[in-house]
Length: 111
Image (tube, rainbow, N blue to C red; front, side):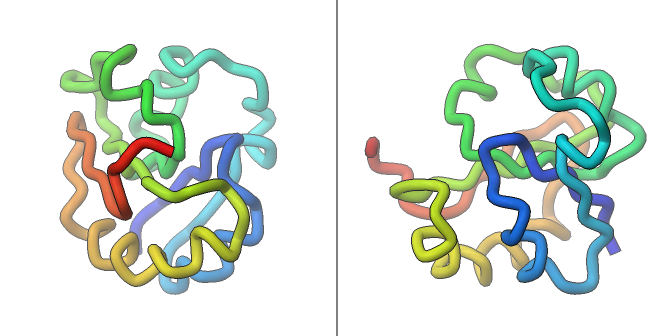
C-alpha cells in the first residue's frame, strides 16, 4: 500500500479508483495554494507519490533529492471521463515509482 497525494488539479473522486492505497488530497492536508516546490518538500517523507496533471513539474522542480516520487498523468482534461481510461496504467505504475523520480502515464501528446 502506497501513500498517495492527489495534487490540486486532480479531482477528489479519482481517489475512489486507487484501491488498496492510502490516498489524500492536497486540500485535505490543508496544503491548497502551496507552490509546487513547497508542496513537494512538505509531502516528501509523508507520502510516497504525488499524482498530478501538472506537466511543468518535471521541468520546474528538482525532485532528485526528495523522498517522494511524482506520477504525471497525461489526459485531455481533469474530468473523470478523461481520467478513467488511465486508471489501470496509473495503478500499474504506482508500485514502480521511486523517490526522486518522475513517471508518467497516459497520452503525452500536448492538449
